[in-house]
Image (tube, rainbow, N blue to C red; front, side, top):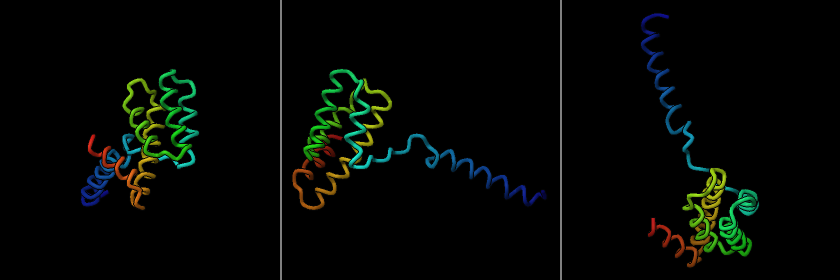
Length: 127
């Protein structure tokens, strides 16, 4: 390699390594939402061996989701997300479920559902 090629190659390699180590390759990227039809089975699976208290909260969330009560499910998922006794898998599933339910609420609010809009406004106000 001649000197000119080295002068170009080294900075390009450093830039590539830096970009790869940045947000594009980060483990802390935002989780992907679960598909709407996968939220209930995912929550049931991850909390099936949980403590009685966690099972009770997750069962209520599942019941609300099955009843299409997204506002109440969203509130329950928020309560679960703040629990320090969740396993990593439970925390990930709750986060992905929250994103999914949040998207449902946003869609409902956009079509004029005032309850969904109010739930989202209250959530933003508490953040």
